Each structure stands twice: as C-alpha cells, then as structure tokens.
Length: 114
Image (tube, rainbow, N blue to C red):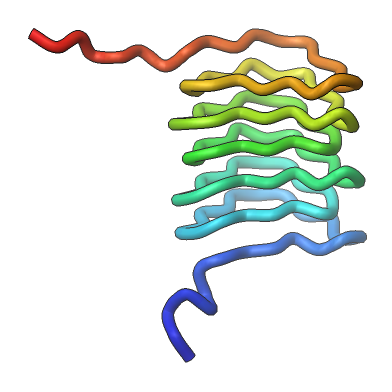
C-alpha cells in the first residue's frame, strides 16, 4: 500500500474519545471528542459530531458542535448546521447562512515585506 492510505484519520459515528490526536493528514470527526487535535491538513467536524478541543490545523470545517479554540493556517469554514462556541484564528473565515457562532475570529498576522 502507498503511504497516502495511512495519512487520514476518522473518528467514527458513535465513538466517544478523549485525549490527544496528532494526525499527519486530514482528521474527520463523526463522533464525540474532547482533548487536543493537531492535523497536518484539515480537520472536519461533521454534522452530528460534538467536539470540545484545542485544534491546530491547515484548514477547519465545522458542520456540528465545536467548543474550544482553533489555530488554523488557512480557512475556517462554518456550515449552516454548525454550532460554535470557540475562538479561532486563520487567514479566512467563511460563515454559511444558518450557522450559530459565539466567539472571536482573529486573522493571522502577515509579515510585511521590507
């Protein structure tokens, strides 16, 4: 098998877990998770997921419940089914109609060219 077959991680529906996840690739959560998540790519919180976490990732997409903080390098996206109580940083914030958001968003600092 190629290396790519092992880089993505899914926490399945009905699974309840807590702790620390360090995923080199994409991380998708369909169940309930509490703890810390670090992803080398995107973190996806699906519609029925409940996540209490501190997240570090390249991108974040939330369709379920998310409580905590997120330090994201690129895009933070809240779909219309998202329920957020979190403070996030990123380059871009996209909030779709219907999302409920309580928290702050701060744009990543950009280094000025000299």
